[in-house]
Image 1: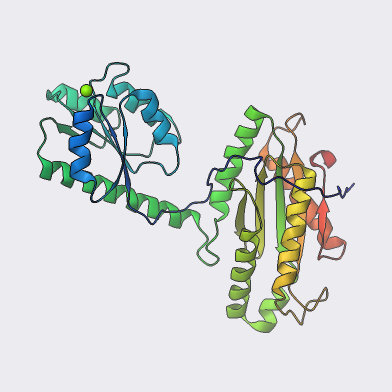
Image 2 (image 1 turned 30 degrees about the vertical axis):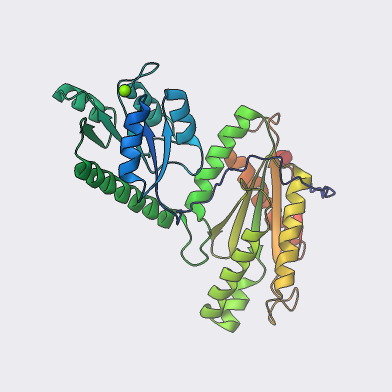
Length: 330
Ligand SMILES: [Mg+2]
């Protein structure tokens, strides 16, 4: 059975404003300097401030807070001897947290025994600098770690972005779906999903050629990506002419509203499709579904299947429409 919930407005502010897209920042890299002695922070900051954006912390709590906050640091210079929690413990926490484990850590410390250095490296630190430090060596080691980090970020961005449309790809979507599925079961909020297909895209390719087909995919992807109002929403290319939209903390009405806005955005593009039996321009079929935390559904796969079945029904019913399907519909 299909249901078409009526659409009501969805607040763009009800969701955290995390940035969920695989972006690499263009501005200067950020270095977090951690030391309980302000004089030590000052000395390092003076050395690096011309090339980097510097943020600082003098204790563990502040360090972990800054490491998790966007834009996240690209490198952490970490003192070991501190009064509340030592640098080793902080490093252990950073490496155990999915949000911060990829940030390289360099220990900067007065401890100069081989076993101190070995312990730091075993905890996952990228490098180790003994105080008193040589400015040129500090700069060189920092530059090395930052350029490695930026290269890794770039590779990750390439791996998670669709090359043609420049929006996130299926791999990124699958990763976010798993993360949001786990998060929504902890925090009890509805999670909605849209599966989108360009109507009669094969006919478009056959008649206009693959070059025009690629351009059409690019324009549709860019238009879809502009619709969601919340930073946590995700629009990804699922494959071929299929797109997928993940809407955390969004109920059925909100999901339908976003879907209808997407259909309207593509209508407004008015990309001619003279060979479509549905309309004289490019149109979309959309399948929508949602999981409520209290629903006895145990996997994100069930949500994907429900949205996929809804998409199938939208096509069966004549395309150029959105069909809602309850996740329990089987
Ligand atoms: Mg200290």
